[in-house]
Length: 483
Length: 78
Image (cartoon, rainbow over all chains, first blue to last red; front, side, top):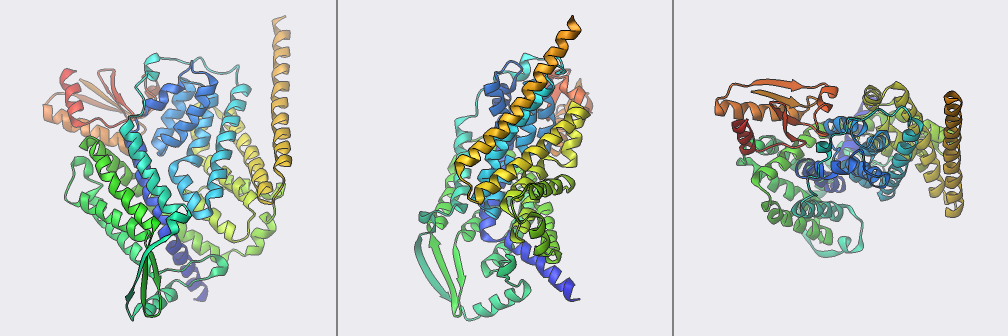
């Protein structure tokens, strides 16, 4: 019975820290941003840069941009990928798009930053960007002669105008909300005002919570605070109200819509409030963060009024759709990660991937390739590995490989571009993920930047040299046959 | 009138079909619906993004959800 108890507590502890204040301050705005990107950004504004006659300098960055801005949902990934490949800029940018989308969309980046630290989020976006473009270019070069004749149709890439200014402003305000809720800056953490409510039962309540979800610093279990418990209550209330208030908003605003939005603002403001339980009462602290989060939430109101009601309804409906699609999977995933965590010995992980070696990075990649986790669940898994003593290098290798190489993405790729190309892509992703892990690990271990640059430089030279060799061989071969 | 919904069967595509059906019912026109899920057939139209609405082989909208007024306008004109 004992082990079942500890497994259950492990799951609950992991869930409690997932629903803690700082994670909510990041994930809730991130869902609203994802909704806004999907509902308010006209896709044509980016698609027009992906036509067959666009220069490489524009189409590769545009493909990466499409990956992070348009592809929050799998139902956009497939047609866009097929479209770029068959009708637009070709195989290279299509691959860049496919590579960049799962690693660098707003939900993945925000959650990585909060759960693992900003440096992992930055590493993830930089490595995904450079290697996404790199793999795209290599694929384009390898399969150049078999590139299909594309049925270009000018109408597909017609200039539909840019992103409207009000949309940019609105998304900017949402991003500012996300940043002010999560970034650890001095002026955000400065105490503006604090007061203590006396409540004699406070310590007893906290003790009960500690008994349910024990704090264990050694394994990174943060326990459940009183604030956390209240936040979970608020989330449940939002869930109950939003089912109709946001889920049915496409038929027009209903009475529950303002209630759901009001509760969301309340939750964010409360999550940004400092709450500390003492022996005699509860100390409440209003920090710069509390103020900034509340202000940005309120600023969204007049900004949203500038849109048609129809657009606002679309935004809220899309947001709720993302929450419904991702949140339950994430909750189950986080709980299971906590349960599994109890049974894994730190020695195993440290033995396999405790240092930044080639084998360790390969192990990270192999685990990423063979395990399939739903969107975003790779983040709590990575967090578990980190707390078990995995080296940051192999961890990045895993984080690069896991979302790129799910079974689903391999199958989609194979169906559209053919098996040979798909497996070449898989091989390249595995190679590049290993290399990113090695680079990031060396950086963390304090390797001198010059040596690092030299290493990366020689790696790039080897790749380019190999490609060049293949290219000249092929040209020589073509020369012979034409004679 | 032949109305085609292009899309891989995601939530948005189903919703576009539902909205269009409602608009058709409101106008009382006779229309045949077809939900095209095959990627090659979808790609034959000049679009890159789904869901898309095709009325009598002319693409009316792609990649976003049209409002009811827009839908009614296209269906009346078509």
